[in-house]
Length: 204
Length: 372
Image (tube, rainbow over all chains, first blue to last red; front, side):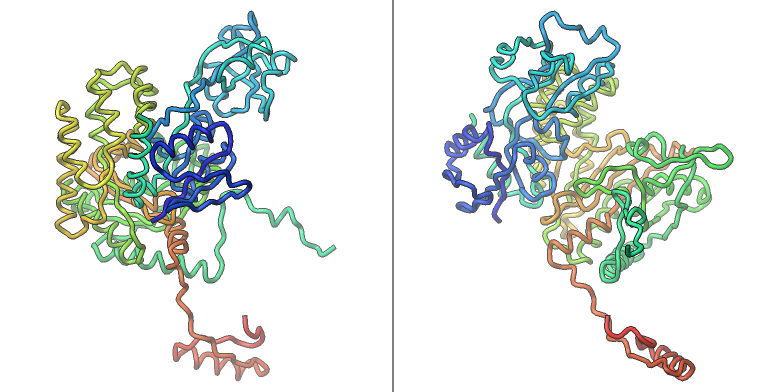
């Protein structure tokens, strides 16, 4: 039975391709705008990175490659059996140096592309945070006074530096994960197990 | 202006409405499943649609329960599940009945739940509870009834994934962990995320052997041979081994009853830990991304109602079964015989004729309307 895999063409694509090739698994060459690519017994779906958990949760795809950042934000009911080891970065709270210590403030405003995750982070610390959802250029928010701090993904820290922001604390370490639909995991056990094993061996 | 009031036609999220063939398909599924329950000597129970909110308090569902004040100031709630109601009735009204009690239900439950991935605000559940019986036999019986229900519907390639909460619990120290720590670990084990388990375990300060055991749980899922692996991997944890022994007994019994090929073992199946106390299981089938149903042993619930009794039960979602059968191409509606048209030009004569046909068991269409 052929497995369907959901992948995104974003940040994680080169790492995913390299890993699949090392594992001796098929991986589509540059397919231009094709969104569904059947190849050697696998079917690849190319979707937006934040949609990967959704395709897998609904079982439209059996498996997928998603960043842990996206998984934490989506809260999807999927298995995450493998840390694929690439796409490493950190989810952090960042703000202006010498800016407010949120632990001492009664309330604060946080800008983020990850509103669910940001809200949960501050709620767990007993801080009442108003989360402003932005779609990009989040680093601007503290600089312009739209928010006291941001919750965002940091790879090298350069964007933060260039905008005069510093890391206040780490929320989570992130990397690419293999995600699996629970029903596929059991009802297509052999195919799924074989895929997990090959990827695990290639990851080392 | 066509006089339609659009704001009155709007539907709230999460509700459903079934018409004609959709409704008939659902009735047909319900009839088959309930027929299996009756066949195993379960008695139907039709509990109230609402009860005091206390009855449903404490569980996972409490925050998702629709509650409202009664006229006398008491807090009432629409039933978010059947099991707590059945436990209450078993402890109260049925308290003098000889044990075990075998009860089944079929009906709607209501939950505050944003619609997503097979979850709705209004769900139709068919399930049963086996109360006060010998645990090992009751566990096997309930699994066999679940299996027969799926067989009866003709679902292809379904899998019963069995776990036991005692395996996970047996790896944790006996003095309970702080709730948030245990919850964090549980979630990562449930997600089969070994990296996440290690991270969550750091916060919980567990012994290295316990951490390794928990990490192994994320991998101990698959054919029933997993049980041998688990025995070896968790040898240092007597409570986990005892749970594995119970799980193995159920697997052996079901295998002897030729259900072996349908079984999977999943030791990472740890949802509802504060509720389940033993064997847990879920039903999966290709074509539906989420489970069709599930259940398990819950020996602590009845004590809440003042009648401590061991208990095991399961539930199948009618909405999910209907969707699954449709996805698997098995949802062909049973065709009804054509209705005989009876003219109503002379209503008296027409009705007499229609009633005569009805007495013969024929379907009739009276008067105008033509073909649907």
